[in-house]
Length: 165
Image (cartoon, rainbow, N blue to C red; front, top):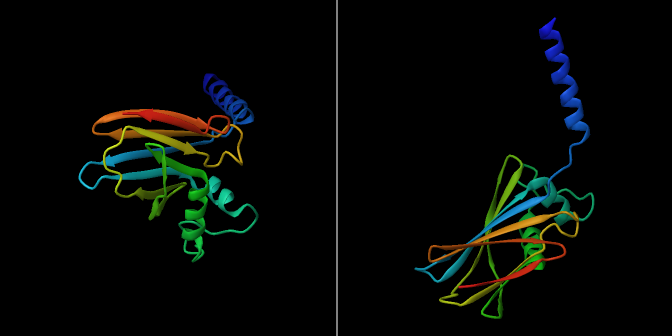
């Protein structure tokens, strides 16, 4: 009898949890200053289904990370990144070079780099990735410069922050 009640409680609890489930919209971005090359190496971790929806803007399917991936997927992804992710180094906008992407299960890792940055005092980071789709999108950006780590939380209402070094 106790076992049956326990099973019913678990099932009922599961229904309550799933009825109140709300998808969490978040991306992670890591910016590392490579002291040897003077470059900013940038890694983004984004949910693949959200990214696919963002780059298509419609029912077009690019099949990120699948055997059905469109040959133009990388160029479309890069254009989306250029529209929504910006870094100013000491007040000067610097365009990133697209390195590539990897898709793991339900996330896509995007790799870009800003070459020949050298030493700097301020980074101004804008990250509007997915904010045009989800009003509660949060973009977490961590920056590592010479072992000093700073983090910012960016969203649709506050897409830009400066970090001084």
